[in-house]
Image 1 (tube, rainbow, N blue to C red):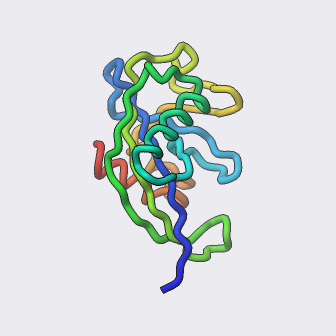
Image 2 (tube, one colour):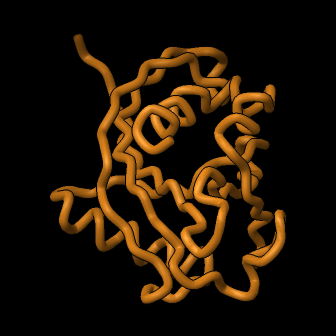
Length: 150
């Protein structure tokens, strides 16, 4: 079967500084009109991908590289209708990384906050699954995080 797969590296960012290990950083993606885990286009090999994902997290979310640890967790394939492409079935390969924040940046304080132009907030996977838009476009990713990290 000829199919195009899109590979994305998903970063499940957890607050490891307090009692909030079950909540994750998400940001509002304007194009999708949905809260997402931070993500980046996957590159090979995994050692290069890990470094690029860590640099992306640091740069895009304004957190010092020394303020978090990151490690690969799992890989999962998914096929789902694309809401951006009229319901056409799309194939995805997700590479899941766990990033634990060991020193919380001042800008990340509170339940919701801005980092540059990104609207961010902390959510549990349970809260994500209660959100109709997240369930519609990203249920598989939330399920992957739940199955591997919670």
